[in-house]
Structures are given as C-alpha cells and as structure tokens.
Length: 437
Image (cartoon, rainbow, N blue to C red; front, side):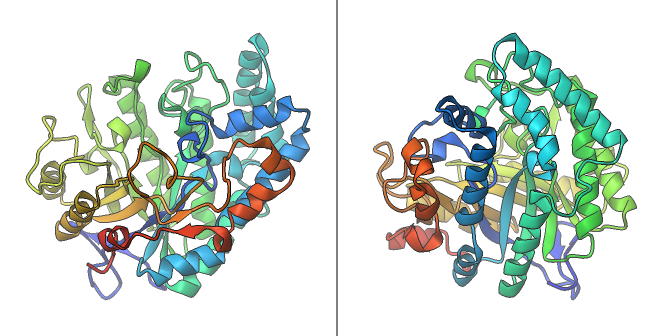
C-alpha cells in the first residue's frame, strides 16, 4: 500500500506496474443512515430519525450523543479485520459531508432540521449563507478534531494493519444531487424546495469543493486511501420516474468535478479520482452535455464509475444510450473509447446467488473492480420480500432502527457491534461474492 495506485490506460496498477483489481465492500448505514436498511421504516432518513427523537423531548445534545455512539460502534477494527479475512482488498466508505463541520457549524444545520413550516426555508437560506462564510473565512473542514477526520484516521490505521485500501465516497453532499430521499442531505422534508440545490446554488458547490480540498491536503501522502469518489449518484427522479439531468445540471456537475480535480492536483495529490455520471452514477452524456476525460483539465488518474443492481450480466449487453454504462457491453465500450479504468462502486442486494455470482465474475473478467453494497444492515434476513439474506452481516437482536426504546436504553448501540451481529450462514452467498474468484 505504501506507494499508492495509478491509472494506466484501462487498468489500475501499483508502483511495480502490476494490475490491481479492487474488490471489496461498502460500509453503508454507518456514517449516513438510510431508512431502507433500518429494518423498519423504509423512508426514514437520518434527519427524520433525529426529528423523531426530538419529538419525544430529547435535546439536540442528547441526540447528537446518540449518533456519536452509533458511529463509534457500527464499524470498528473487528469489522475491518473480518472484511480482510474474507480476502477483500478495499472498502468504500460512504460519508456525509456534515462530518466535516465543527460542532458549532453543525448546530446551524440542525436549525434547519428541527425548524417547522415557513421557518424551515428561512433557516435553510441562513445555513447556506453560513456555508459561504465558512468557505470565505477558511473555517470549513479546517480543524483536525472534526469527526470526519477522526473517523478516517482510525480507518487508515485499521486498514493499514490489514493491507486493504480505502475509497472515500461523499455519499451526501450539500444541497443534494437528486430526489432519492435516503441518500440526500435531507433537511428540508419538502423536496420541491432544496431537493437538488447542489446544482442551483453555488454556495453548496463551493462548500463541497472546499471539503474535498481539505481532505486532499490532509491525506495526499496516505496511500492506504486509494481513491476519492467525489459525488455519489447524481440523478433526477421526480415522482419516481428517472429522467436525464438537464443541460444546466450536467454542465454544473462537470464544472464542479473539474474544480475539485484541479484543487486536488494543485495540492500535488495524485490519488485516483472516481467520477459518477447521471442516472445514479452511470450516464456520461445527458441533455447534450458530456462528462468525458477530454472535457476535464486534468485527465490523469481518473476512474469512471458504474452502479449495478440485479442487472443483465451479459458481457456484450448494451444500453440504448451507450454513454449510460450500467450494462457491461456499454461499460467495456466506454472504457475502450476513452482509455480509462472503470470501477463499480455499488452492486449486490441480490438474493439470486447465481446471478450475483455471474455479476462479479463477469466484471472481474472485464477488469472492472467492485465493492458490494453493503457489509452490514439493521435487518435483511427477516424481511418477507426477500427469500434469503443478501448481505454479509445482519445486526443482532431485535434490531429495528426506529425503536426509540433501543436508543434510550443503549440496546441499539450494543446490537450493532461486530460481535453481536449474525454472519450470513448461507454458503452459496459467500461463494457468489468470493473476491478470489
């Protein structure tokens, strides 16, 4: 790990010019919590859980302490040791940008979360003004003791001890880049306002640009961190129907990437950078606007993303829009055309183990690395819509995430520890996701 990775043509290689195929797991539901993995309320976001606790009379400080306890217990060194023991060589870490705010700055964000009615929009606009001031005054992501840096520092130590790489993924960005509630910065509740505001208010974009600049400054020489996944799953899905990003959205996404890449490279940081297109990360030409290597100032050490869930595994299958690379034939064609490596940041959640196995085998055959979604959830095994478990670890006990009693008596924080989780007992599942195949 000491010398880092680089992109050479369509491959990721190490310092000895040996191909490295990254195969690992996401550690989702840890630093940004998604309701569909909670075992109870499929639409409940992290912010909604805070509001539910607040409605019972809990103070802001008590609620933040709860979330600190959750983060401290959900992923520990024992989890990382287990991941490494299964033969994986990387983890992808979904981050919430709020972890790069100080406690005082996060209070301004909480003003929005806990506001009601018309006061919420006022609080949101005030918060964005604060974001701009923090950028201008260089107080955003500038303190070494903020949670984001402390969490990453711990992960670096755990992963370095296990000789596995880290991919940092900004899963929730200021203002959000889509309408899918679980993966947004869900402060507003009403997505008719502030639902895709990353594209429409420069203050949100500049805040993210600054956060990545500071991450880069701190970790540019830490080769255990092998890749920066700058923005997770840009998309536009009003009323549940997926549509292309508009030309304005695609242009601002491309320009935002360009700015962040330039900032990172100006720090003399050559870490691999993963870019995601529209359509939940897969589409690199929408509304006439492309995001190709040729569209960017700095073209070195770029990797292009695809996300795949229960998709056609034929290695020659092509999307109707060939710049949408969710199908493997389109992915291979894109890689050949642009001479870039590909990486599948998310795939899995499949109880058809034959299809799951074929998915991983065919991606590996095509030289596409991958990270399984996801390592641990609050429950999957007891959900009647699935015939069998789809994830490696299931949180122990009666593990409903929105059970207030479990927050209050600490049961939740105990159940999420590695030693209290149930390892998926199905051999066919482990065979399907075996990284050594």
